[in-house]
Image (cartoon, rainbow, N blue to C red; front, side, top):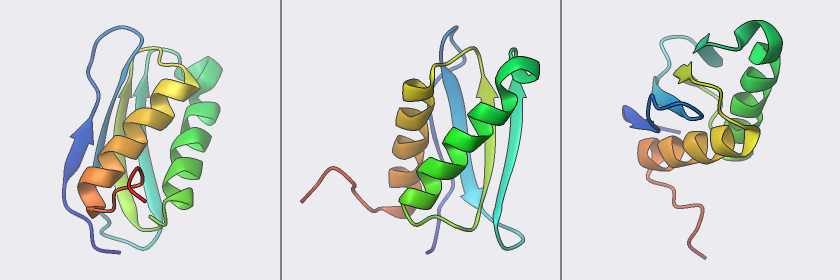
Length: 93
Protein backbone atom coordinates (compact mmCIF):
# COMPACT_ATOMS: atom_id res chain seq x y z
CA UNK A 1 0.00 0.00 0.00
CA UNK A 2 1.42 3.34 -1.04
CA UNK A 3 1.49 6.06 1.60
CA UNK A 4 1.82 9.83 1.61
CA UNK A 5 2.97 11.90 4.58
CA UNK A 6 0.00 12.78 6.78
CA UNK A 7 -0.91 13.71 10.31
CA UNK A 8 -3.85 14.04 12.67
CA UNK A 9 -4.31 15.37 16.18
CA UNK A 10 -2.90 18.17 18.28
CA UNK A 11 -0.43 18.76 21.09
CA UNK A 12 -3.19 19.77 23.49
CA UNK A 13 -3.56 18.01 26.83
CA UNK A 14 -5.49 14.75 26.46
CA UNK A 15 -4.69 14.44 22.74
CA UNK A 16 -2.04 12.85 20.54
CA UNK A 17 -0.34 14.08 17.36
CA UNK A 18 0.17 11.18 14.93
CA UNK A 19 2.36 11.59 11.84
CA UNK A 20 2.54 8.77 9.29
CA UNK A 21 5.13 8.57 6.54
CA UNK A 22 6.29 5.91 4.09
CA UNK A 23 8.56 3.29 5.65
CA UNK A 24 12.27 3.20 4.86
CA UNK A 25 12.32 -0.45 5.94
CA UNK A 26 9.60 -3.13 5.88
CA UNK A 27 7.27 -3.19 8.89
CA UNK A 28 5.89 -0.62 11.27
CA UNK A 29 8.26 1.70 13.08
CA UNK A 30 6.60 3.55 15.95
CA UNK A 31 8.47 6.45 17.53
CA UNK A 32 6.62 7.51 20.66
CA UNK A 33 7.09 10.55 22.85
CA UNK A 34 4.68 10.57 25.75
CA UNK A 35 4.29 12.20 29.13
CA UNK A 36 2.97 8.84 30.36
CA UNK A 37 5.30 6.50 28.44
CA UNK A 38 6.54 4.71 31.55
CA UNK A 39 3.02 3.74 32.59
CA UNK A 40 1.22 3.36 29.25
CA UNK A 41 3.82 3.32 26.45
CA UNK A 42 3.28 -0.34 25.61
CA UNK A 43 -0.51 0.13 25.44
CA UNK A 44 -0.20 3.23 23.25
CA UNK A 45 2.08 1.36 20.82
CA UNK A 46 -0.31 -1.61 20.77
CA UNK A 47 -3.30 0.61 19.91
CA UNK A 48 -1.34 2.31 17.11
CA UNK A 49 -0.11 -0.98 15.67
CA UNK A 50 -3.49 -2.72 15.93
CA UNK A 51 -5.32 0.18 14.28
CA UNK A 52 -2.91 0.34 11.36
CA UNK A 53 -2.88 -3.43 10.89
CA UNK A 54 -6.70 -3.52 10.79
CA UNK A 55 -6.55 -0.89 8.02
CA UNK A 56 -4.03 -2.90 6.02
CA UNK A 57 -1.09 -0.58 6.69
CA UNK A 58 1.89 -2.85 7.34
CA UNK A 59 4.83 -0.68 6.25
CA UNK A 60 5.00 2.82 7.72
CA UNK A 61 6.89 5.08 10.07
CA UNK A 62 4.72 6.57 12.80
CA UNK A 63 5.83 9.49 14.93
CA UNK A 64 3.44 9.97 17.83
CA UNK A 65 3.57 12.71 20.45
CA UNK A 66 1.14 11.85 23.22
CA UNK A 67 -0.22 14.22 25.84
CA UNK A 68 -2.24 11.71 27.85
CA UNK A 69 -4.76 10.61 25.21
CA UNK A 70 -7.22 7.81 25.91
CA UNK A 71 -7.22 4.69 23.72
CA UNK A 72 -10.31 5.86 21.82
CA UNK A 73 -8.59 9.16 20.97
CA UNK A 74 -5.41 7.37 19.89
CA UNK A 75 -7.42 5.06 17.63
CA UNK A 76 -9.33 8.00 16.12
CA UNK A 77 -6.16 10.00 15.40
CA UNK A 78 -4.32 7.01 13.90
CA UNK A 79 -7.36 6.20 11.74
CA UNK A 80 -7.63 9.79 10.50
CA UNK A 81 -3.92 9.98 9.69
CA UNK A 82 -4.03 6.60 7.91
CA UNK A 83 -7.06 7.62 5.84
CA UNK A 84 -5.20 10.74 4.76
CA UNK A 85 -2.01 8.76 4.06
CA UNK A 86 -3.65 6.00 2.02
CA UNK A 87 -6.66 7.71 0.47
CA UNK A 88 -8.71 4.73 1.70
CA UNK A 89 -11.91 6.03 3.30
CA UNK A 90 -12.91 3.62 6.08
CA UNK A 91 -16.18 5.46 6.66
CA UNK A 92 -17.58 5.10 3.13
CA UNK A 93 -19.48 2.02 2.04
